Image (tube, rainbow, N blue to C red; front, side, top):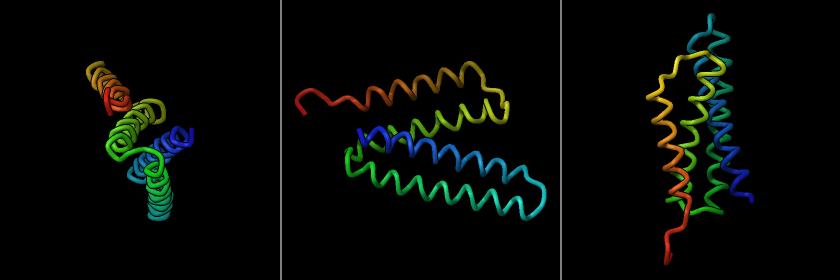
Length: 112
């Protein structure tokens, strides 16, 4: 059960970091740019700490693809919802393939 919390935490923090970087890139004024950069980097750093905690519970060969794949999914969904970015059906198909790969990666192989 802690592994699921770590995965969700990592995905959330990674998504937040990328949202902050987008806000930084589109901000006007040096202070807003620096503020969003600071929040984004802090979120990214906390995400790395959460990922390290996950590695106490899950092997690296499972943790890496799961967290990276879900981070991609989180950023894509955030881009659509928060920034109204257009995401093509082909991109959604690619995302669904990533999610399918994550699911397949998370299963233990027979005899392992």
